[in-house]
Structure formats: structure tokens, C-alpha cells
Length: 209
Image 1: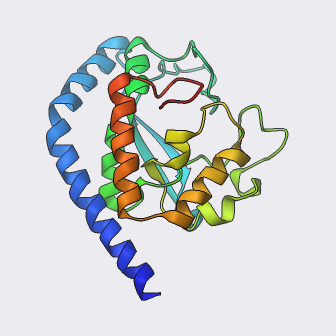
Image 2: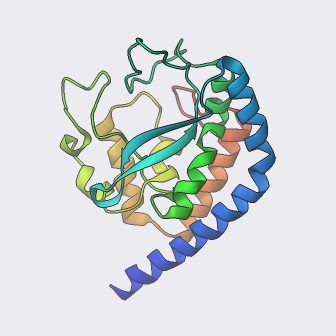
């Protein structure tokens, strides 16, 4: 138990320090992206959505908006991940391919809602092709173990799993991370994530590395 608490403390210090450094270093990009997003359709720069975190805690994840603005009277976007999604803006395509749309989530890390590395933070409801199998993510086999750690900007499933595989398989990657988690594994996954961002491969449907 002591070892687990020490590991969590080190991980929290690492996350907080790296997130602060990330905010400082990326501040010029925030200005550029904010202007580009606003000029695209005069809509809000940021996108907030409720996500499920550790132990089922609900929090609002913060991202740069990458989809077209939903005008009054139009139906809201469902959480469906489409290849070549027509709802994604021109700026949004670049942001998603490089994961720069995730930059504002550094605020979530500083607040303690998220970690740099962990299972992907997901909405509660399932609203894609698996909606006939599950109503919400708690019904997906493997949810319980992955929910025992904070969600992350990147993780085992985000880096190694093809984008289009089913949730059960992605949760297996997540749970493998939970079983093997440690500082060196976190550093490895962060470095691999930078490499994927540099190559603009985050939206590829097959392997990214």
C-alpha cells in the first residue's frame, strides 16, 4: 500500500510539473490556434464535454474546438468518430492529426482530473457503432480496472491500438497499462506520443508507430 501511495505521489508531482512547463512553452501556440479557430466560423475557441474519470468521477474535459459550430436549431454532434469526418474544420484536421486539440487538457491535469498517461477519458454514453452492444462505458468488459486510475492525454491504447478497434480490445490495452504502470513506462509513452504528433499520425486508422 505504501508503495502504491508513493507511486501516485511521484506521478502527481511529475504530471503537475510537466503540465505547468507545457502551458508555459505552448502559450504562443494557444494564441495562434485560438485566432485560427475563431476566424474559421466566428465560434467559440474551446470545447467542453463531460467525461468519466477515476472511480467514475465526472469532469469537463477542455479541448480546442475542432468541429464546425452547431448553429441554433441544428442537432448537436453525437460522439461518433468518423474517418474523413465532414464536421471537422480545416484547422481541426491539423489539430487532430497532431493532437494539438488536446493542449487545453493540460488545465485538467493541473486540476488533478487527468494525468499525462492513462486510459482515454470517455463520455458516459456510447453513441457510435457499438451503441447496440452497450448503453454506457461501465457495461464494457474491463471498465472496472481501467477506472481505478486517472485518465490520460496519452496511454497504451492511444499509442499502440489501431483507432478503429472495438472498446473491449482498447480496454485490454488500458488494463495492461494499469498492471504495469510506472514512471519509466510513462516517459516511454510520452516520447512515443511526441513522435506520433510530429508525424501527424493521430488520426490514422491503422497502427501509428
